[in-house]
Picture 1 (cartoon, rainbow, N blue to C red):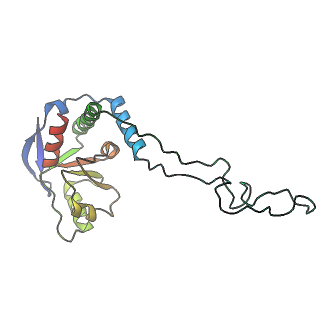
Picture 2: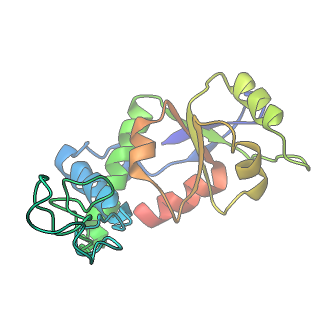
Picture 3: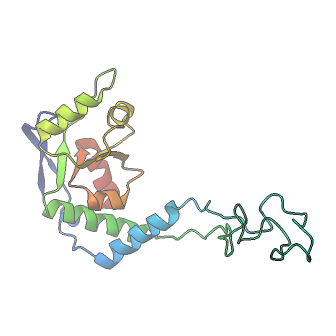
Length: 207
């Protein structure tokens, strides 16, 4: 299959060969769902934790005597019913096990995603993408204006430092490499822009 390649100005140029095995891949919803859920699960830092009454600092002394004050009994100022006290059912940090998707399933899921992007005309191939020094956000905005879209994921063969710096302030623009693809971003993006060398390298891996 031939795919059209454009330049930074949106002008059509040459064409590149794209493996038919990827283009003809039937979209496997269950497999893609497993890949996405595994990716999200493994992305959690698992650092969330709350303090129960024994973990909160202070409260070792009984605030007042048990009887004779007219007030309710209290054994510690760190009781969950007190302000600044512990949490009643505190979430305790427990490292969760990482989920795994084997290599064959991983490649098949990404073939499904790429096939769907192509069929829905959401995949764009650009010959190269150069950002001048110093990198400026206005240059990315001009690029998007010429290409005709505003929400996109750009995929490079290797990390493009200038592009990342210039697009940092644009919340709807993301940058990835073929070694760190985020399936969630690829599925949700309005357009996915691959550089020609990145798409060729990825096709070799997935074929």
